[in-house]
Image (cartoon, rainbow, N blue to C red; front, side, top):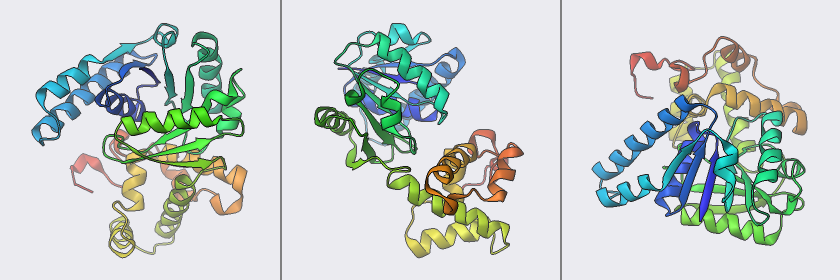
Length: 285
């Protein structure tokens, strides 16, 4: 099966990596050659780490690498796709443009998935002439480590499309849950509330980021603290999600003023070297 991943950022390259390991032929598409080069380099590092940790053989890694191709032209990549997974930032117009484009290019039996964590697969399906073939496949960061794919059905998503998405995710080595659309789905609604409240507590002077993260991890059993997670996914991405949830679900999702300040200042997390934590010190968090 041919899978096309649209967007070679953090999530797109991760989805491409697990898709190739799952045995799929993968085309990773992005407008930027530099982003594609960075994606290839990062995936090579992950293959090497998998070999060194005994999770992959050299042969398995090499075969998976050979299954991945890189494209700057979406039209060229998407023509023979069986599944297209969009993995671009949570911006409505950007997603709309992509789905309108692939709807004109891809075969009629191609399934379309969006990796959105909050946005409506029903609305995204309306950008196409095949809403029954559109679904959300919400992967988690880092994709190669996180076991879940949250599969979200839109209003018109067919049973066949849902089964197809489940089977594809499981072939990638993932576990799945299938839920019906509602803003934020399951995981993002909870994660955004916890993360936003952590910023409110920090703003109130309740404790240091380290102590708040430690309390959540040791007291509630979370594998990562809310600030560690926010820095990993990107404070700008977290803010975008909160703004969407605030507009759709109401006041309890109003973004913390401190989070707004961090994003305005360019403190976006690991990808910029500083977020809640300063990664220039190379301190593990």
